[in-house]
Image (cartoon, rainbow, N blue to C red):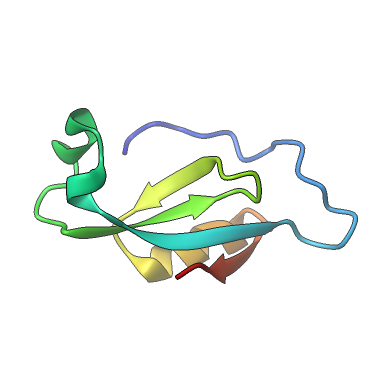
Length: 79
């Protein structure tokens, strides 16, 4: 969770801000080395590109949306 990600990637912005998807992730479904970093959190929130690449993993839904918007992306919830 402490890995830096370069958000200056080649997103298609021809239709405005690039869309990213926010979805819940159960901490138990993460690799062991990541579970060691999440503490007591049972549910985390992942931000994914339209191609499915996980761009970020955060502990709070509001933070996921804030992170996307701070990087000029348009967050959309996935169920």
